[in-house]
Image (cartoon, rainbow, N blue to C red; front, top):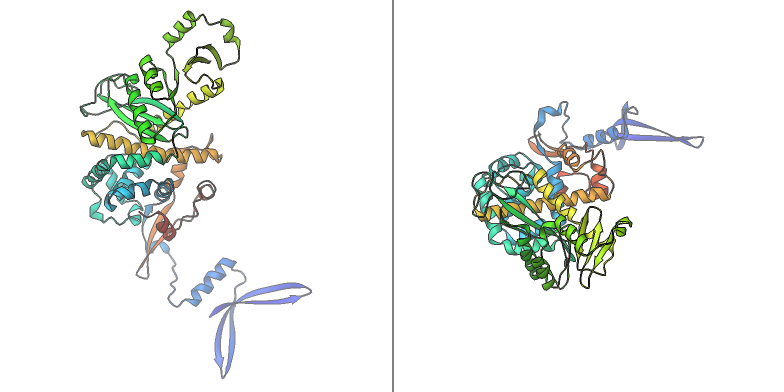
Length: 457
């Protein structure tokens, strides 16, 4: 039995009809019996009917819910696995870690991006998503102790992994955008956790300082943690020395906020043949205006404007703040633009604290604390890349946020069905982000087998 198309031409116009037909043999001749007209069926229904008729093992399901086993979170898991592959993060980790450690570290990264929680809660969460279908981990290997072992494996290979991660940002940095924030602990924390000036308004908690330097493309090229009561300006020498050595930099420009500037730091930066752009403190600004007898008429000019210059440095007024720079030949507009690049570091800190929930920290071993922060930083790079692409392609706006994008992804599920004794995995067809994923990230429609081929670890 099959579906047959019949067509005839009348006065130049084609008329067609569709029939359910049975073939039988009469002598040496094949005859056809027209059983029913199916013109009322849609083309897709006629095609599916024909497939069923041609397949002897086909099963007709009146109620699919009887065969549904369970559903899994899918859209957000597969999308961020794809992004980690695209950014080179999984390949970087694969080169240095065992298979089990690699899979569990990817679990930690996914958890930070999608559902920040403790390591114990993380392994329970991930087991109920589609992630286990993309790795070779056995059910017994999903444990908090194994996650800690995986973190220790990263720590043992940290220098090579961090070096590779920093270089994913592309090329030698031209600008170093550096800033510091504080991260507090529950409990007493590690040895260097001290009470100090808290950016989180938690002076009652011990804290460490997190210093991060981004390149001009907004990608991390350095991070470190310092004692919670160290002045910001005392951390500058470390970042200069580390980045210069790591990248073999001959010339770059250090960009820092008010807390970084001091005669000693300017000497350290200049001594390493680095340029600098730093905001000066309000007290220093008042002394500059008084001691150098800056002409008040300069404040009537369009800003940014140079208000004072010496042989090796100049001061640029940019609204409510004054910038000092050793780049005397750089245009004022460029000086201001590069200083405002520090907003990228501030955005990084907001993501770490608000979206990735980097604090409070519940680790009490120095190596675990540093690894926790490093993995959070990798997660922030993933989020930052997604945000940047959505913004550049015009999707982000008043009604569309990164959080909304992730929420819509979580609506795409994977279903497991048991039909004819065979397990079948099928991805939900309704995907409100299908066009966005294709145009912005070149991610084709979700397909279980294809996704496993391209995103498995």
